[in-house]
Length: 83
Image (cartoon, rainbow, N blue to C red; front, side, top):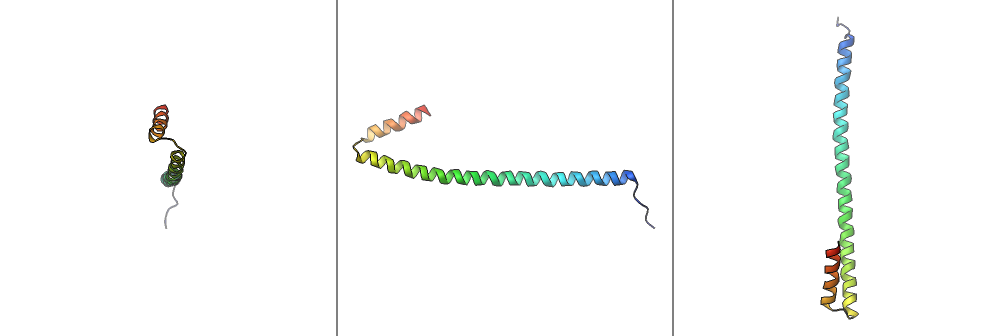
């Protein structure tokens, strides 16, 4: 006949299982944060591509309106230096 585990063993087992669950939760949380960060990064990259395309389109409109390349470069430099 097997002996019933004493309170000390039961408590020890409970502590171990609690720690194991904690490790799993920590891993899952880290994976979730990583996935969330990658989604944000992909979103930012997509928005950057749209903004770059828009800037190029508007730049072409500015050239057609008579702005010189030198003027546009001066604007770009002004913004870059101010940023």
